[in-house]
Amino acid sequence: MADSFDYLIVGAGSAGCVLANRLSADPAVRVCLIEAGGSDASPRVQVPAGTITLYKSRVFSWNYFSAPQRHLAGRRLHTPRGKALGGSSAMNSMIYIRGDASDYDRWEAAGCPGWGWRDVLPYFKKSEGNRLGQSLHYHGTLGELLVDKPRDPNPLSERYISAASHIGLRRNDDFNGGSLEGVGLYNVTQKDARRLSSYRAFVAPVRQRSNLTVLTGCEVERLLLDGERVSGLELREKGQWRTLQCSRETILCAGALGSPHILLKSGIGPRAELEAAGVASKVDLPGVGKNLQDHIDGTLTVRSKSPLSLGFSIGSLPKVLASPFQYLARRMGWLTTNYVEAGGFARTPLAGDLPDVQMHFVPGYRSHRGRLFEWGHGYAIHTCVLRPKSVGEVRLGEGRSLSIDFNFLSDEADARVLVEGVKLARSILAQPEFDAIRGKEMLPGAQVQSDEQLLAHLRENAATVFHPVGTCKMGTDEAAVVSPQLRVRGLSNLRVADASIMPTLISGNTNAPCIMIGERAAEMILRG
Image (cartoon, rainbow, N blue to C red; front, side, top):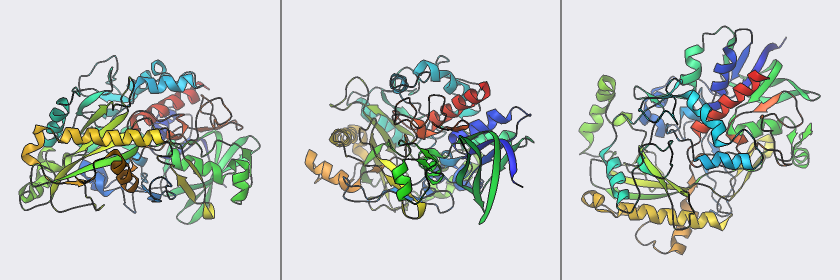
């Protein structure tokens, strides 16, 4: 006999954990939260500096690779997604960014009533436990998700902010206030200099609820359909098949890659594509897997001899050896860094009224060879296209595996913005603040100067910032997968609540918006 629950939540990531908390607050309902990964109880996850060890982890990451990118020299791009309690919030850089107000107004204008900025702001505030004394008009202080400043920023982060001011970029101490534009230290989702993932914020404190079941190591294979209802699902647990039944609703929160994959394997998606993959079509829904968007990133990397930057050298050896003791005793030192403490939003000459690029400053050496650790010192700026026009898709590949095609730089406008963004980063690092620690530019390299040369370099080196969205897009048009109430079209008791429902990519990091989506979905479900 299958286990039965009122609500099945697939994916213990940014949105799924919020839903598990809010729905299980009613002791009369049975809630099951299902995660393919395992425990997050590892220093690699909990200590901020451990984040760079997670991207290629065989334990904590799905380690997807994209299809060959036609406009990026045929390269297959590494695409990590979180595989543990907390999902990608257990491996991200802990940056708290909501995006620009216009992002949500654009959703509303595109056929998603109730998703404008004035509508979503209360849900951002509900989750937030702001510790920075920022404006109460924009911020909440009572939520479970603590938002704080970096505990012990590297001195190079302030040099970056000061250098940016020389080229006209103002300091912004609250990217989530009235204006996104400017540079500054990013707010982070941490508690006592430890990662505060969505799981740690919303589920761990209430996991003892008798009506909340949390399953780990369980990969959902398909949804079970009974006419227009989802009656349950099949999953694999330790190599064994298991069935769970659902009496009320099933909510997919497996992310912009995982949620469409489950739908497609369940026969929900474009009929012709499903049949070609050997999957019987149950619900012909052409938009499933389409509309994939992500931030494409170009990196400027500089070598330096300065031990002020993060890195391994004889000069930094005392700091490196002292860092565990500093962290354990005072929550200070190198281990507190998320490696991208500072950054900001700027307008290139191609922009209109809004920033068109985001920067993440790294006060350490970003290997030009793609290595996780590199001997020596340096610094880098990652620059990404904020509102890309290029659109890709996910679909079923061989053996019903997931095929991911970002289709990066298919729109030449994105290529032009990315080139201008790298030029902007160069101009910041050319300022006097970096004179004392200046070294050789490794990427793109001094020999790469013209726009044509920069674009050729980017085609060989650009990558994703790991912000995929849009593959189960919300709306009312024929391409929409879910309604503005997040219900899957053609099914009465199935919703999607994660980054996949975004009609368009927001202007920044996607963790905070996914938590907001979880809050919105929970209220919709509870209201009936």
